[in-house]
Image (cartoon, rainbow, N blue to C red; front, side, top):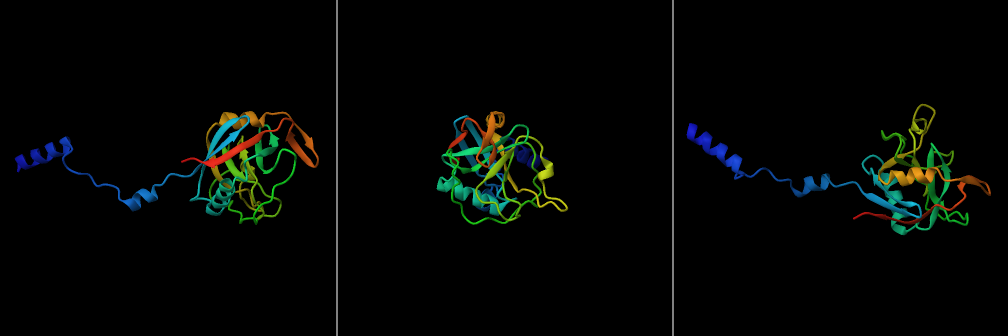
Length: 195
């Protein structure tokens, strides 16, 4: 019996006993979250999307990314210590056409903390289309709560947060009816999914 135990121990040490391998279904379940790269005239940053927490929002956002909707748009609302907002306007102040608004997914357990990305909307709950914002502080008062529908977080910046912070500090002014518009255009030159 002792010889058998010694033989098994040697097999394990030598790696001769096969460990269970992950099958295709397990690999699919462990699929990485999508990453969207933003190339801007101020530098690049990357955002990881949480489809499992905000499936409608992520699908909507990726639709705009894949259509090239964000290419050539600007960050049109920038507030230092708060957030940067983009995805809706061209540099000349023209608002781009969008698809129908989506359902608000603010009750997903995610919080508007520093580095997170969320959908912008009007006072109407289910009104988000293409515009988004990136928090540069812990803005938890934007989360869902009693008498507060909140704003739907659907991802976070995983690379280039220094670029986002730099954008948040640019000089701003009013442009038409829009406040906090950067004096020098901050342009999203290209947005695409990372492969």
